[in-house]
Amino acid sequence: MRSHHNNTFFDWNPWHGCSKISPGCAHCYVYRQDKMYGSTKSSIKASLNKDFSLPIQRRRDKSWKIPPGAMIMTCFTSDFLLEEADRWREEAWEIMRTRNDCTFYFFTKRIGRLPSVLPSDWGDGYDNVIIGCTAENQEMADMRLPIFIDLPIKHRSIVLAPLLGPVEIEKYLDHGIEEVSAGGESGADARICDYDWILDIRRQCMAHDIPFRFHQTGARFMKDGRLYMIKRSLQHAQAAKAGINYRIGEDMKPF
Image (tube, rainbow, N blue to C red; front, side, top):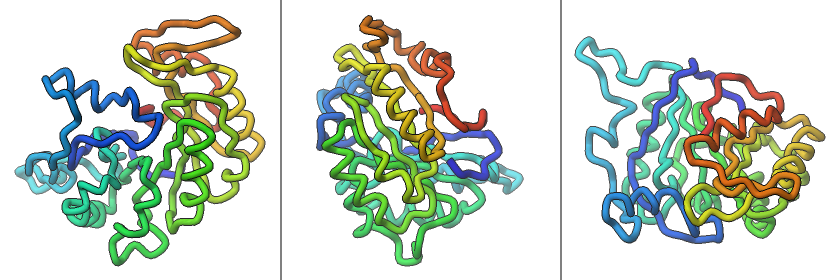
C-alpha cells in the first residue's frame, strides 16, 4: 500500500457505532465492545470534542500532537460512510485537508455511498487518504468491488474480512489496487476461516504483483482439515507467523 508515513500510528474515531448491513456484520467487534459497556446495540454518536478534533490538536509549543508523517487509522469503531454520520463528515474531511502531512486510512462496507458524500474539492482523490473496500464473501465482493474500482480514489485497498468463504477477485486487481488484506473473524461466535481461502487470495495477488497481507487468523482457523481455536491475543501474531505476506514493508500496522 502506497504511503508516506513515518512508522507512527494513531487511532482516530470521530464517531462511534454502526448498523449491520451484510453477513460479515453478524459478529462485529464494535458490537462486542459496546456490550462490554452494557449496551445491547451499537449506538451511533459523535466523539467528544477533544476526540473528534484529535488530528488537529496542538501542544503548548504549537506543534501537532499527532506528528507529521503519521498514519491515522480512521473510524475503526464505525463506518466512515455511515448514513447517520453525514452531519459530521464534512468536518472530518476538513480535518483531513488540514493535516495533509499525515495519511488517513479508513475502510467501508458502504462504498456505494462515497460519490454522494465526497467533498467539493475531492477531484480524483486526496493524496493523503487511503480507502479500503471490505468484502466477506463472493457475493459482497461482486457487489462492492465493481463500484469501488470505478470511483475517483488515489489510494485504494481491498479488505477481505471477516473472510467467510473463498473469494475470486483477480478481475478487480488491475484497477489501482495497492494492497489486499485478508483475515478471519474474531469473537466467541466466530465463523471458520480456512487457510486454503487465504492462500488462494495470496495466489491471485501474486499473479498480478499486488501486495498481500494475511492480517488475522480469526478465532476458528481451519488448516489442512484441522480446526484450531486461537485466542484473540494471538490472532495477529499467528497470521504473521505464517510468513505469507507478499511484498509488504515492515512499517504497516496490522488491523
